[in-house]
Image (cartoon, rainbow, N blue to C red; front, side, top):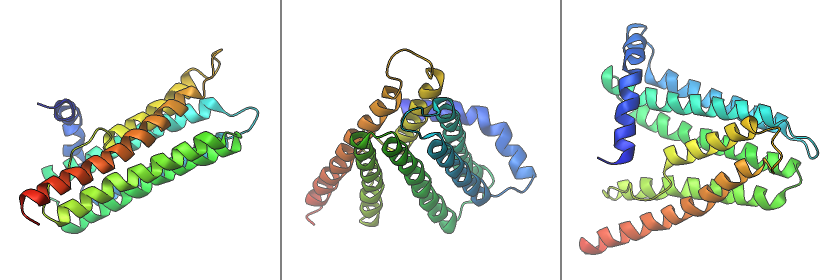
Length: 217
């Protein structure tokens, strides 16, 4: 069993009672997905408000990281709710995928603005590269599935990107008063996403090339 499958199984065991409660309250997966987007927008606003060239509000960045984690949990809840409550629909899948892209790009764009306001143009560009990689990972998978190719390969899929972003923000808050350069807590995750997400995108392209070549297409 892959580590992601094992971790997902553990999380499902924890949230299943909550899912059952949501079903009784007639809460739909689409509502949960919408709440997740709102939470990510809130986190983005917090990150932007924390920006300052001389004295960034790192504790607020940390709280934003917590909000991103909670929003990520909502992203797991909506899919589980759809399956357990027999509420899966084609539109729901479209809605979920679309709002996931909005959520991730909004939070990463907030970090771009945060670095820019801090006078760190290099890492604003790195975070922009992370945005590009994030979009392309999802795009290649969507195009592959349109060609009837399963395409989940790669090192930096959405759950990993969300966790890295959230943990980076959280560590900024936790070590806000530390003597070292606390911004590294956010810089390192952005580098990891920028590099590994784009590698994953090309990895998926190579995977699709191999599959299509085997099919003679």
